Amino acid sequence: MRRIEVGHAGEPGAYTVTVGADLLAGLSVPERHVALIHPVDLPREFVAQVQAALNPALTIEVPARDDCKTLDVLGGVLSRLAGANIPRDGAVVGLGGGAATDLAGFAAASYLRGVAFYTLPTTLLGMVDAAVGGKTGVNLPEGKNLVGAFWPPRAVWCDTRTLSTLPGAVFREGAAEAFKHGLISDPSLLARVLDPEFRPGGALLEDTLADAIAVKAGVVTRDLTERGERAYLNFGHTLAHALEAVTHHGAAHGDAVGYGLHYAARLSLALGGEDLTAHTRAFLRWQRPSPLPALTYEDVAPFMARDKKADADGVRFVLLRALADPYLTRVPESVLRNEFTGWQADLADLGLTPVTTHAAPLHNPAPT
Ligand SMILES: NC(=O)c1ccc[n+]([C@@H]2O[C@H](COP(=O)([O-])OP(=O)(O)OC[C@H]3O[C@@H](n4cnc5c(N)ncnc54)[C@H](O)[C@@H]3O)[C@@H](O)[C@H]2O)c1
Ligand SMILES: O=C(O)C(=O)C[C@@H](O)[C@H](O)[C@H](O)COP(=O)(O)O
Ligand SMILES: [Zn+2]
Image (tube, rainbow, N blue to C red; front, side, top):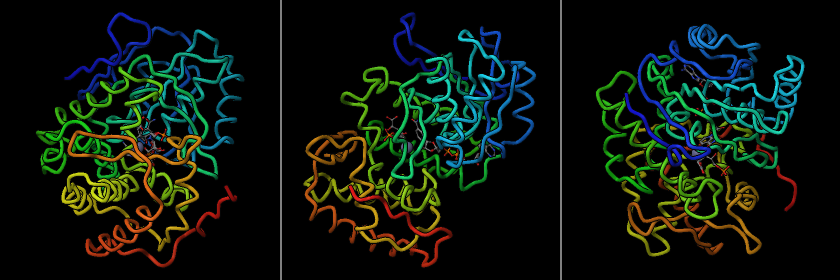
């Protein structure tokens, strides 16, 4: 078992992330009134274990994946909390992947102006990233995570046994965030994430997971509300979020991050940084993300313009001068366009050819 501290122990807002097998059965929280929120497709055994341990006053099932990160679903959850008279000294517990814990956290942040929140992530991405650090929220049709709050959990339990029921593709989605932590801060993670022993039940799972969490824990301890360094956790995300929004979340977050890391590596090189594209290519070869629809730069640019790192002077990107040396900068439009073309050519070389038909029409955003 590994424990990672977030914040400074003993100070308000500090909490522990526990990583280990079979944690769910032994859970306890001090609050007497608990609401449990989980996605509808989560294996029942995990829900039953948490119900047995925490005896929640109510259990709320929410739609799978980003279908739960809407204002409508949020409204329904808030009504259920109020209907069950969950008091201000009660708690919301989010069990599931990053989508469910993002929604649950925002419900906890906004219900009665804030109640205690706990996260029980059951995906690799949830453990390594979403459950830690207090970013909570929902999406708008105009873009990803455009509504939310910083509302840190009181504790995070990563029960590695839950990863055993995860489809392989969903595990590989989550690896994108661990790889990102390697690129921006701890290069030792790069080889470990791609190692065959980094898998549910594998010899490298627990330590690699804990070391990847430690990167995020360190950053959010120093900069919870993204005044500075926290923006580096957004490496690869300006394009990733645009890909998710333009495909109506047909592209999963972790796949979109895999694609976005390679675009950001190309931009970094174009602006004079070290060539790190061999790393991001290797990752994409390993990840095998679902193919994207055929996209033009014009399809994604309006969504990139709404990125939360934009300020009054426009969009900013996180780039790398070298491994573990991130910085925030503006990028000329001509470079963004050229590298988009180069990125598409690289994807074709990697066999990640776009699909010509897509389940939903591309989202046509309102003019900015
Ligand atoms: N708050 C943050 O800091 C942060 C960080 C990264 C990502 N995110 C958000 O997280 C979301 C992506 O999270 P994700 O990759 O975990 O995907 P997800 O939450 O969409 O989960 C993927 C699918 O796996 C199912 N699932 C979850 N656990 C399972 C298990 N143990 N066995 C079988 N199925 C299981 C889920 O119900 C879902 O259908 C995105 O909305 C993204 O924006 C938030
Ligand atoms: O925790 C952060 O900060 C991150 O940027 C982590 C990202 O992996 C994550 O996807 C986050 O939700 C993105 O935040 P956003 O502010 O760009 O919506
Ligand atoms: Zn992310």
